[in-house]
Image 1 (tube, rainbow, N blue to C red):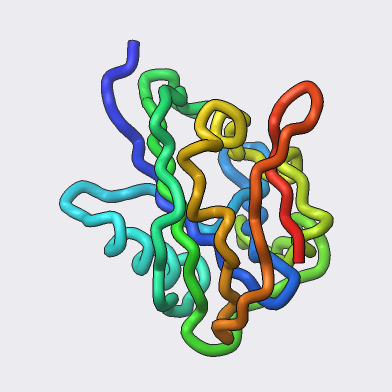
Image 2: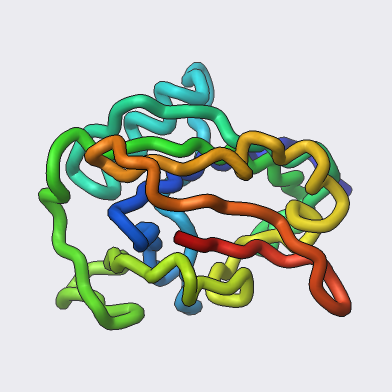
Length: 177
């Protein structure tokens, strides 16, 4: 039985033709997702977004723009009693990246449980993201008008378009330069 909400806030950060992903160890599994995390009690969504940027990246973000909030039921993969609500923001880093970025998936430093890497937009598939919910691309694609607008990298250049496309047997996310 669902007895609480678990609100997650995620950042889409771009650099030219790449998007930042976070590789993480959660419990005993390896996962890939967008940077971000859970909303704390007494915290607003933007407060959470800025806190998560500082905690995870060690760096501030600027110009967050709300892209999408899930509006369907999603049960937590880690706690059966939790209902997940995910909120996605397009944002920019304040300046150049000041954190370690690897080219290797799950390239953790000793004692660390998180690493970051850029993934080329034209190579990113929804299967690459551990928490991407297929319903976000299929049931509610009509609500994602903002995702079809150009995304901005940290320098503010219009470089990338994200759109939802029909593929068989389900809809998928498509990134293009």
